[in-house]
Image (tube, rainbow, N blue to C red):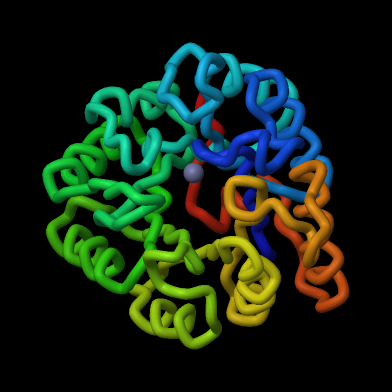
Length: 277
Ligand code: ZN
């Protein structure tokens, strides 16, 4: 079984300080929180940046660049940049894909449309085709986010069509109020449809984070934790840092005995040839 890759999703695009007083907002806070998560055991950080005016997520290339350059200088983290913008606000395609120009090793690729937070997060086939081609051209590996089985079928079809190349890497996003639930049965159903040679990680939104971490641990997958997905360390106990959420799963992984992947080991597992930039 591969070593266990921990991804930390530092801030996301929509959780605000009134809900999570400690969530990183400014580039400096996002950089610092990423470094702490790396020191705690994360090999990958999933990065959004925020609009200083509204506090919400934005696709501002300069802010991405500031975070990317600092993390490349100070850490050996694998960077996974978002292409979602704010789900439900459906930014222009060029804006959504602008982080790919920074050539991160991974970029999120949401493999279908879904209701999210009162809006519709649109990822129609034309967008998916353009995103896949843009990432392929830039040498950026798609981290294929899957909210339900239909999205997985979409990704498998695009693989058949030669638009997504093996080995695919999936991120199962389980436990949103609109997609597949964060249950063992739900995860297993997706797991059984994985193509050969694929790697996968999972996110349990909210209280699903520990059960999904444990499922990934025993099934040979990987895990994403962090304040984008869950702001509670335990029931009623709010996380003050992303590092605390990483440390919480590190304790479980170490007790179980599966080794944790360093960034360079994670690169080998994910088939990332080298750090770009
Ligand atoms: Zn995200």
